[in-house]
Image 1 (tube, one colour):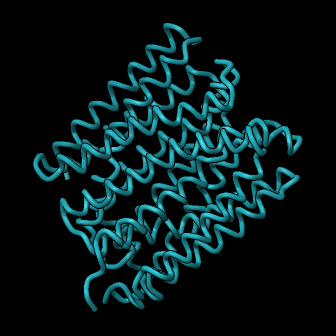
Image 2 (cartoon, rainbow, N blue to C red):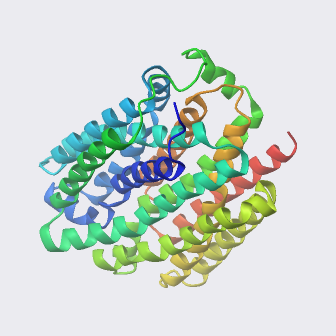
Length: 387
């Protein structure tokens, strides 16, 4: 079988990642309106984000096993169907319990998209070219940050929050048709036997595990921030839902800058050098945010501007960590990317749930969470350098 067009592989993978992250972020500006419509509190509806992440995390290892047995194309189409149906049902919710339950199901669909997109890239690219290809997925992620929150705010203001979920369902159906028409069939993606034991082998392999943990902690910073930020900016800083949606563009620009830096410079500078620079940027940004909120807890600029610098560093770290984990994987097939995704989503779900349950609804608490997570990233990087 001839090798598929690399541009087509990257495009389909980017669209899958874009949609899965859109499902995570697009509804955030509507969070207060959803709480009001469901006759509940923002504190309870904010659990919809960590629940979505839990839905992404729990089945990831199963998606990887199915991908190895049945092929990436079939599993991606199944994931899109599940995502589409759950999105449509979310738009019809009238009770918070149903809403949160369906967010979990929607996350399960997004889980398959995420695993298959990264597995498709890891199957066809290696070394620095893999890091470059994965940086395109980061660019898709960042575009979803800006477009997702902005489009969500516009749709909610014009038509109401249910239209957000109708739009996600329709987009998933369209992408499913594209996957069916454009991606080649791949009945089994590797010669590695299908076996759960491969995941245990990966967990025991420190050169794989440490970069996977680093990427997950960095991803957790974004989730922790977005769990608390809608309420903080709309309540503490008196921003409107539209104002908060506009902030997505600044976040997107920062993440895009980091992703493009990897795409442009990783071949010349190397993954290790770029990773060290990114961690220094993240540490400086989180320290500035912490100092800023202590100086003035009423100035939103002192929160969102350092955060943008922080996620610029995270945009550099994330594709590099995925590439390093994939390169050092002792097991072939989609297992490495599935386990990476599982680790990332579990960490993100735990961080998001902790921020929500502990009620980190003040700028000082949010800055403290970001600083703590960056310190943990630094610790893992030190351990990696000694391996």
